[in-house]
Image 1 (cartoon, rainbow, N blue to C red):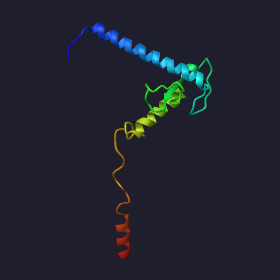
Image 2: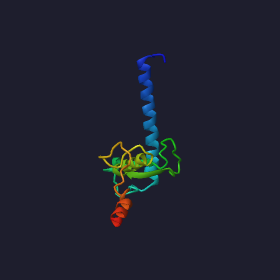
Image 3: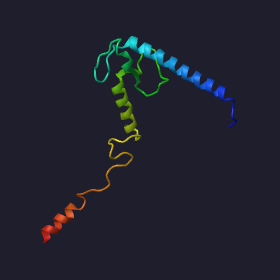
Image 4: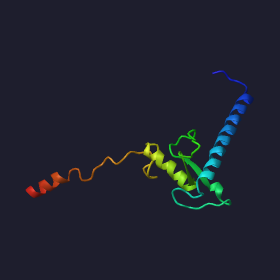
Length: 125
């Protein structure tokens, strides 16, 4: 890969960020017009004062899928939105369900695996 002009790269990154922000504002504004300002999970209500805490969640997790009827969106508060994405990560195997077991698989030891043979040997004695 050829090293190019750093200012050109900076311009490209800035343009991409502006385009993403514009796209986000577009679907956010549409969603806020279509849906009531209530979190779809916890039912918390929002006003102009705290509207910045209400986010648009893409149901199919594809941020480019923005149908004008809003069928791929739901309004979620910041907390429920974070929770939804964490649940998605865990469902796809990308996260852990507890802090102590982070990065480890399930339990491999079965404490009762040998119980039947132990009880049978007790009966015979």
